[in-house]
Image 1 (cartoon, one colour):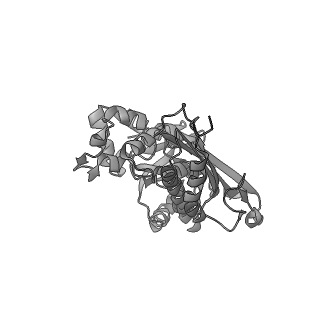
Image 2 (cartoon, helix red, strand yellow; image 1 turned 90 degrees about the horizontal axis):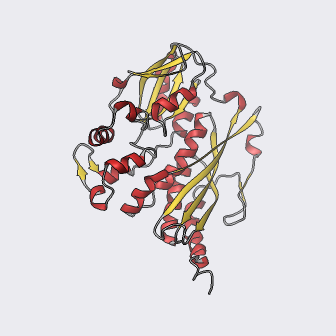
Image 3 (cartoon, helix red, strand yellow; image 1 turned 180 degrees about the horizontal axis):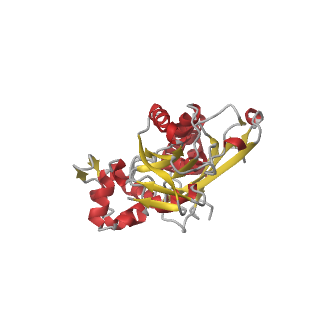
Length: 341
């Protein structure tokens, strides 16, 4: 009896590391110290010492049951982008610049090519936001997980000068809410999606005219990483007063998180066109509209609040970063919360 017979293939682990090295190298920043494969990742803080009060911000998350679609479609090179996005978008909400990222893959059986594809996606997400992939772990769990399945989670660390933290403290009536478009469902609400749509290869390969693609293609689209869009706003000279990443809990849970007591967010449904995937999901599943806005991003992945005089400049900056945006509402005096009308 040996470890391989027990279900853990050490040699496959070595092969996975070798295959992923070329993707990891593409994410390196000058601050990264040491090579790939050490017991920990080292990152120099030399470049941030000129900040008045450098403040670390962090985020951790996974991809959730969206991974089930990757299994069924046998496509594993995009869920890593989702994993990075879910972490670094939260960091960006605080005004932070992502510095480095670590991933954790738990699998039933280590298939080196598949693991390398997962890490390829993670590396792509890191490149999109400028973070270095300085470490990670692949854990083989025979008997605990099916051999052909895995789970993916990650952890990111960023930095912001304390004076540049986005806290929502300066919000006032009349401020405008700018919504930055999502790519679709992103990485939330897939447990409900899997109840509405039959989760088979045939179902996911079905083409829908209204979607302009197959169901699987649309649902597996990676989460947009908004780091560059928010940086573009800051570089334009606009002060972002508050920011909300629309993830699990949709508008009703996430928008109030950026508000202080005494202000109320009003969002107009007719200010932008809700993507077809949400309309199809709602009609096919018979889902109440309130539940849709309480579960999904409905086409808006990030909301920033700015002074009304800065709205046009904010939208120009977002578009310059390659994203689509809309004025979707405003801040009013009132009880902390959100009205969608």
